[in-house]
Amino acid sequence: MWPSSSSRASASSRGRRARGFTLLEAMISLLLLVIVLIVAMTMLFQMRAFAERQQYFMLPRQAARRATDYLSYYIAGASDVNYVNSLQQSPNALITYYNLNGVLTQASYNNLTGTETGNAARVVAANPPVIPTAISSTNFGDIGTDIITMVAPFNPSRYQVLAPFPPASAPADVWVNFRVGCATSDAANQAAFAAATGFDGTQSALLMLVDKTGSWAYVRIPSAGYLLDGLCSDTANQNIHFQADTTSATLAPPNGTGGLTDPVFLVAGLQVISFRVLTDSVDGVPKLQQKLGLFDPTTDNPYPPPGNPAAAFTNVMENVEDLQIAYMYRNGAIWNTVNQTIQNVAPDCPLVACDNGVPFQAGPSGVVAAPPVDIQNVIGLRFSVTGRSPLLPIGARQLTNIDVKETLATTTSLHFRPASEDHKVTMDTDHPTWPLYDQYDHYRATATLMLRNRIPRG
Image (tube, rainbow, N blue to C red; front, side, top):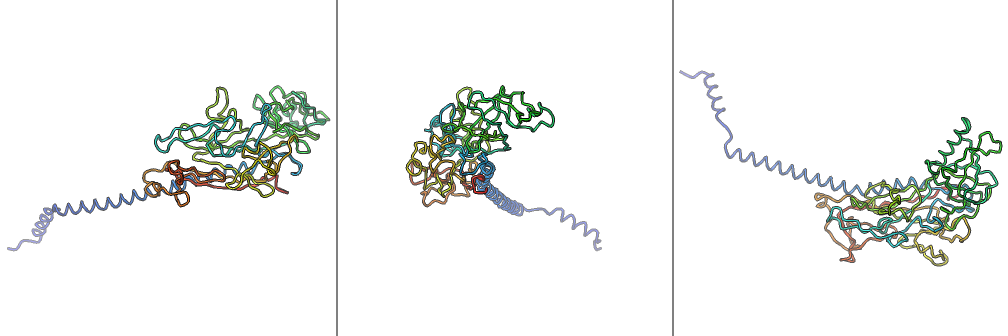
């Protein structure tokens, strides 16, 4: 008797259930799986390393461009705020010198060495401890970098001082035509004047007195100098009365003031700002720093004596390792480039102060005649910022020429700080023809900006 179809199906099912993978089939399957995983993981790691390489390749470019944009905002806004014809002025948009307590003090520097007056060399310990090596720096900023101080007004305003302008004295009584708050009350007007002059509870912000010839002087109003006898109802426009030291004994233009001729204006809303590059001693990272105020060699260092406010400088941006300033003159000369520097020889500047590498500043007094390279003849700045990546990770190092060591004339490596203006490449002491290679990417960005109020009809 033939078996039924159902019996045959049942037997077939039992046979299929009994059949499984042989050892050979299992081994082949596992081998194929391993091969697929190896290929996939290899591609994953390569793509990740490639992505890291691209990221670290772009980081110094982003740092340099961000720093350039940031500096451009202030340099584009730099102004002399003296409102007179450019041929008559003794401008102060760019500050290279000023008198502090009767001593000529430098506010801008070219290629710091650590030997400047008040400066000293410092060594920043390596961080990480082995890569890179310790960094040579100075108290003012990193070796070879520049410092610039400028006036970038944030809300400039001027108020006429009632004539005759008082003789220089400490203090001098000054009356000002100021009626901003008079629609409310005398008290509101006095409060508005305090706000306009940047009163912080102890003194005003740094102000300037400017006359019709372009002569100027620094002035600060102490807390006790804000007097209350100026009235909005005064028909002679003696609305605000203050007392301040107009002798410029503490803070003055370089070579002193030259006197002020009526009409004289009080200029407020100024913002004096200084920029430098300094490597942080904690994390070993070079940073662009700024200070709201004049650079002061006696206080603006990372290790100040007790009581000195070195914290006036604040970090703006990390991984900025170089700042270079080139000054562009009316006659077309550009100083502090790799081929041309300020020299203490005629006809450029037969004055000792020109040896400091930044333009001389004669000031408004007329005591010293302004040479052709005086800062008042600078009409624009070319500034260069060099950005640096973080330390390259192992994966990214394998995709670049990190270990290639060639002479400066032939290398295509990006792993050393590039030359910028008159700041040359640092060379390896063990191999004098090699640049000092490291394990970072570097990139230099450059911008050129004209000073608006020094351009004809600017």
